[in-house]
Length: 179
Image (cartoon, rainbow, N blue to C red):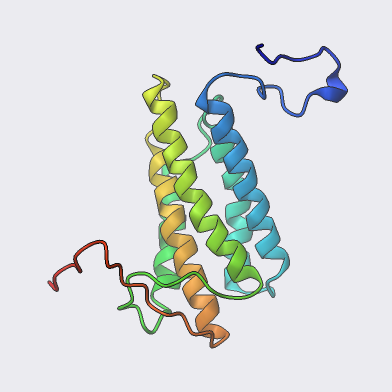
């Protein structure tokens, strides 16, 4: 049986929900990501992290719509997001940790979820591309940058809250050599 729209608009969650492609999966993931960003915003004081996330949230919906419609992620968005990422990353005092076990309270938990979802968004772009859909170059760049940005935010917020973040050192891969 092939699932399809019943014809009753009240029974349709999303116009493309029955589509057999990765486009809809990408849109659902970016919708979820936007929701988690909103949840994190609601738990933060009016500070630089909240302001940065408030700027970012509508752009995640721009990312969402860019897969079918006109591309809504521009070079200026990447430049701004990268500047915010560097700003927050530079606030981390123990930046020698490559990766930490995801811990924290409040907004930090949602931002760790945003980091993980951003990886899924990138993977979904890979799937969409593999299906032959042309992907604007700004989308994977922006989406990959989101992962690093959210990681930096979790580090800053945990540092401010004095929450210990144990470094995760993989036993599966050799440690990178110092440069």
